[in-house]
Length: 447
Image 1 (cartoon, helix red, strand yellow):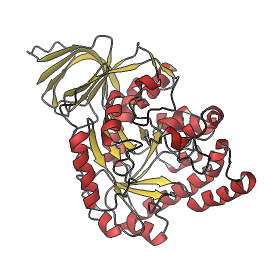
Image 2 (tube, helix red, strand yellow; image 1 turned 120 degrees about the horizontal axis):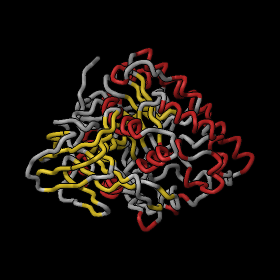
Image 3 (spheres, rainbow, N blue to C red; image 1 turned 90 degrees about the horizontal axis):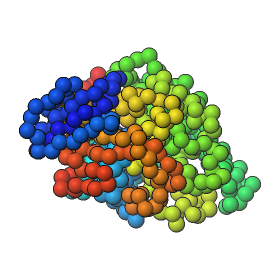
Image 4 (tube, rainbow, N blue to C red; image 1 turned 60 degrees about the vertical axis):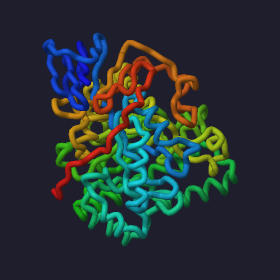
């Protein structure tokens, strides 16, 4: 199959140029500002549209296996490609937790059968599976996930000797959820004694506090520096944590990197009054000052990538009281829209969006031949119309859970086409599900 995209404004590697892109089978065969003369099977006139490299989301929870009433790989990957995400990396807190390579490979097999997007899955660390973790192949798995703050099952890694072993022995990327459990438990006791079980949702960022985040993040950085570990701290939610990160070292040489999620850039603690548990995440959405500092950290390269932490729950689950309502929400269908809305507001450039949602993710994880619009790279591409608007409502939400914290928001840009490995999987609301995504592969060295 030969596809020619003509007259696009190509957003790539710090530039926007008018040009044409030729796709042969699953790779980019040619990029030119001049006319490409070829007999193509499909020609797309992209006049007036912007062509981005496909977004790569390094943190999602697609809920399969064991929690498929909330979401599943098929439904959430479908929502992702409709939102311009062509590759995702999924987390191990499924049921059962992904603590063995047999369970890990089961997830890869399932994704190869049903996912429209490319995929990778994190290996999960616990207090007692270090030997299994160290068997992980860094060329075929995106990283090791460590929950340094969790109250779910056996995912919390809180033993000092386990953390020391992980950081000292693991040669591949270690991705951490950083919230100090002791601080959170103390805060929970304080607010439970004051309110009983009916703690107001507005107290969430006071319970899962800035102090809890900084205490855990600073410990992770300390361990990484001690052992020269490749550390990636997920979903930064506070201004103070930014002091832990460097913006003078080129990303490809950084040992310690950070991620921001779109909900921490979009919402603030003022939104709990109207959104309640729908914006209950861990780490919590915090103050406007924190929100603004995180965006500043993105722009100044203290924060390296933008992701979602997509984590669907049913509305029935979310409708429960504070301690029973689970944390997390669905975001993959709308994350690029959020960032494009910031562009419309003059807060970020299109080039920086491509960098933080595509280029930098590929560089951070050393993904093979993805994240850029380059000859010979896989044709993971997204066409966006910056002059088309739509409002998020239940009728156009693709998540299995059927809701979004962004309902009633009108976005002033729209994803029109998404290519995954050269396949036009999404075209103005229609899907071609005949070909599935591929397993991501990674370049690895001990340096």
